[in-house]
Image (cartoon, rainbow, N blue to C red; front, side):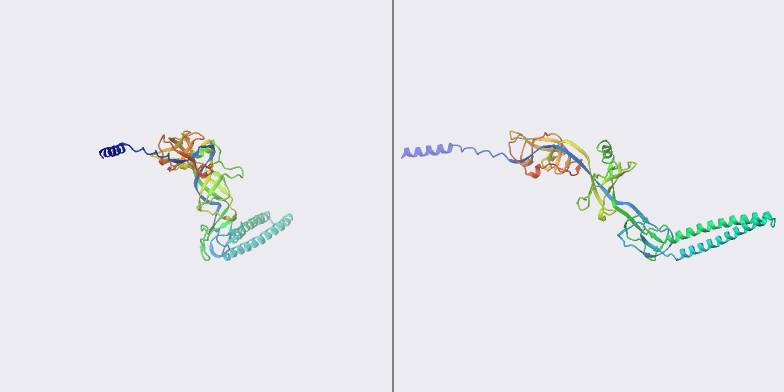
Length: 386
């Protein structure tokens, strides 16, 4: 009995001294990676622009009077020479009739003066009148002829004033809302409405002096276009892209010393008059092409205290966290100026779970993270990484 007790105690002591096996190490964290691409990338810029009519004509009457009729429909297309307003013409018609009568009277006086001169020439040949009589009648003939010319000019001015009671459009375009109504007294300083030529339509935007100088040394995108090929795109207020391209038509003569910008004007086809003056839109243009740029998905770039970090998975499966110099954003991609090489694998998902030198299980990212860079606006300063 004692032997059995001793043996049982010995077994318990042996079991108590035996250590359990150590736990298995955790598996390496899983990350998704994308390959660093290298390609030629067009770099785009955007500016805020204001749409305006290619030509804006303020409609002002050239005579005073009361508006009797509005002959156009507001907000619709009018042709060149179409009647817009009618000013009461009665007093101008009376003045024109009076000028016509004065011209007839002066024509009759001129005819009589010419008959007197003709008769005097016959009488002076027979010495029936004094030479002074002929001189007086010659002077009267010249005075009558001058009166006729003056009366003709007066009649022409009266007819112009009578015609100007019909206020017409000097250009073809969209007529705006009338600022004066029927019955209003208008003068030569009154703006009755505005007609704008909107096809093509003009957009004005300001670029920095540096951007203008880069254009002059580079692809000359800011030079007024000599061909019909459009390089400008228009992004409307609702985010949609206008389907037709435009071209730069004017570069201002000077840089604004207060803002350091130069004004450019572009022209866009506008069939259907969808675009209207006063609208705001973003103007987009390709300002440069980056040759052999290195591209990574934006998800691969992580910002930490002003520095941009990217996790790179080597051939041995270990992570190397690098500080890179980021350039422009191009679509869902980011141009990396320094710190990467073509073909390297960068972490796009799971960066927060890795540390430098850690072994990871890398798998290719979804197609959306590795797609080639689309041609969309590039910005000069990157936003915060994820």
